[in-house]
Length: 81
Picture 1: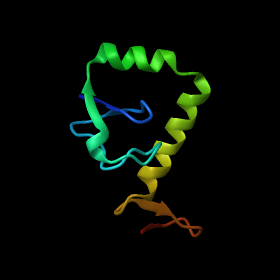
Picture 2: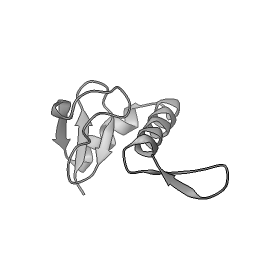
Picture 3: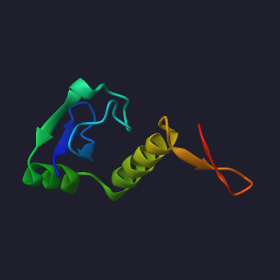
Picture 4: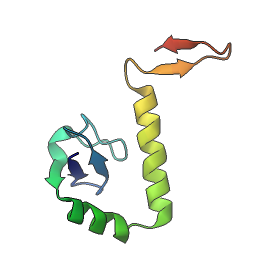
């Protein structure tokens, strides 16, 4: 799988394509560059654990809020938003 780095905040995304917007800083898809596994590991190693946890939480939140995602309602069933 390819790795993409946001040139604004250094968020690392894994996927065939970069995301439309960075889930951490909101930068446009054009701000992502493909990086090697070694480069991605080096960037991640320089980040603190707190930064990594914040990025993960923001990415999960952005994914949950994307069109077509399913959110669990209070009744326990799933609804499209």
